[in-house]
Image (cartoon, rainbow, N blue to C red; front, side, top):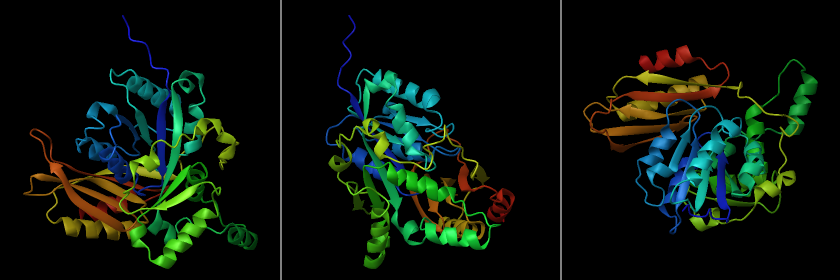
Length: 347
């Protein structure tokens, strides 16, 4: 006899945020401090190397076993809801041990609202609810002005020179993520001084509804109870989550290029990171991430960079029979010079 399907809706937390804001670090911290919850994780990786999935899969956290981690590497989740997301969710719900809570990590380029809309679809509305939308913000990047466009200033510039294209798709993605959020995590707050933290907080506060709270964090360390169990039911609240793309059927990512580079064995990790930072600055690279083979070392090196800020550490040993390769995902705006970047890193 088949066991009856539980009637209680499974809560889903959507974690959104721009490239390198710290979503994966935040999620790993939540998984490690799940408080007895049985969690599942859906990751939408942008690029051909599943760095985020590898990081989370290799940590062996009991609250979220490997079979509960699903990686969707094809396209952006908000564009492929029907093809990718719903089948992945249905597979998770069919597990003998159904998860108590599902966390969805979107691509840094994803608009969250189309994904939230999917929870209003009849096939999943009766089974799932959006417990909350979390926007993770890179505090240091915002302080540096990457997302600090002044609308009045843009209008003034446009009036002075109509030949200049002032469209800023990165700004729109960032704002859409903030406007859909139930909670904003201001990550990397430790990289800001008191005045910068106050200024960035004020900027974000001015862009979001007053009910949405901003929580500064370091290394994504936050109480899991604050993120899980918000009971926002965001699918019932879509009208209060405005988007630049509300009038559109969908969107595309023609404003970004992503490619994977194969590098040789690394002799000196610090020298590699210095070279990556120089290349990122010269070619205005948004994001670099990958796993590196360090000559003579049994451990695999994880490298992650946002702009010119890089971090690296050995994350695990190479397994028996695993090919030791150095592969790097590079993400930038449309027209980024792949050949020049490849040549600079090969030199």
